Length: 434
Image (cartoon, rainbow, N blue to C red; front, top):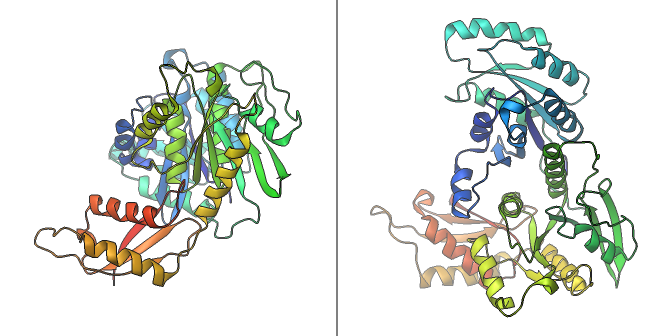
């Protein structure tokens, strides 16, 4: 699958976050509040003209905006140039072209990746005239917009989606697994335990692992590719950029993978950052397995396995049909169980249900509990079919598709999960006019 990462760069206070929120839609912020993610969101999923892509707001990574040294921004632009597919360079019409804008432009002119210049805060005629000076930065694709009102963002999105790869339709012959999780959770220890060789020298210091490696794994008659995501780290870099870099790496691996193996530290539980990755994997329709690592270090009296798992499922709700495996990567306990689970989830993600079987089972479930009447309109579902996508998606043909409630959609998904094995895999349900 192609790289579908779009990074927004630029100096502080030009409106990167506002544009970011507009691109991913406010819906996301609401979803994440429920699951207790309070931190500023730095990346999310966007859909436009049939293309899905991941947007990264680099501004979320520079902590104190007064103290933003230009070096930090330059480093981020460099990382974005290496890792993203498309770069949106944002400037502000009210300040005109600053020295830092000039420096960033100079860097970006050297990349062969598409760069789109977004001149923000253009919301009246005088500013429209002033905005023309930005053509001098030399970017063929320059758009004038106001990210607060949203004017101009449609044209910008059109330009972005035109440049992206189409969604993959072909599955690669080998399942691709990405091991994701926070620094120090034990990703490299797990990779090494699985590959049986010290291919990355594991040390106790956070972030000492080299570049992302694809390792082919063949053992016990099982074959898959492991995308190792612990990115390259340069010691001299400031902490913010390290975080930015590792997030960038994780998202890239997530985009490439079929199955995301999310490792969580048993002692800290699932944190905001883990939830962000979980939700992103869910939106990108990847298979998901959660591994709780360092279970051997947890005080068992207060915390039984069952309680812990229940608490974890509450956090990831509403999508709770996900395998959770307790492991110790260092002690190598239950790591093969983890691999088996990931392979099962891969199989579930590619599962195709015969139309006749689907209709037999689902029409009966619909008869048992028909869709509620909506504003006096009766909804009748006549026929169900699985769509030919690379993840499970189903179309329910009915007379009033717009009147099916969210709660009923949830009921249908639960019935599908109950009758067919889609554990670990997000699914989509569509209602279509017959």
